[in-house]
Length: 211
Ligand code: SF4
Ligand code: SF4
Image (cartoon, rainbow, N blue to C red; front, top):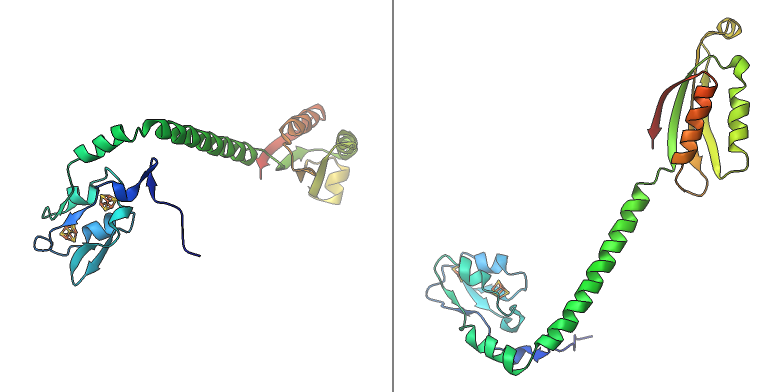
């Protein structure tokens, strides 16, 4: 379906505003700088020369293509006509409303970005590595008690004991596991409790890696 939205500039029909680029065909060397620079698709290159095929899409007051054209082939009418229209059509009430809507959109975008950043900084999974002598310390039992029916879990648990005889002789072993949140919520405070438990059991916390 064709776009029937009126082309307005702060309430003024765009065709009432005499702000359009004019290309001097004889001065144009076909470098295409205007064509590639204009973000509003105003230009097409026709037979090696820039042509403003959609001049009403030119942003009122913009003169970028004219400023960068190496031969000065693009010109615009004086701004006086635009300033006169601004006064006569009293656009500033419209501008104020548009600015209020823009502030609202910007605030919402910022709030969304802040919320997204907050979610991204939440730790929901971490690997914990511990060393020490686990045998008499009932560490796993105490860890299970710490979990209780809270919304956390311990997964991928690995216990490395050097040898069976070593275990009997209470040689140091290595344990690694991952702490997760079943509800995908922050586990930082629970990690602190695990840390405290490790210290209380006289084990060594080798490291905690946020995943
Ligand atoms: S920038 Fe100037 S010279 Fe280059 S294509 Fe456009 S009008 Fe022509
Ligand atoms: S003045 Fe700006 S918007 Fe208008 S045609 Fe040139 S680059 Fe495009």
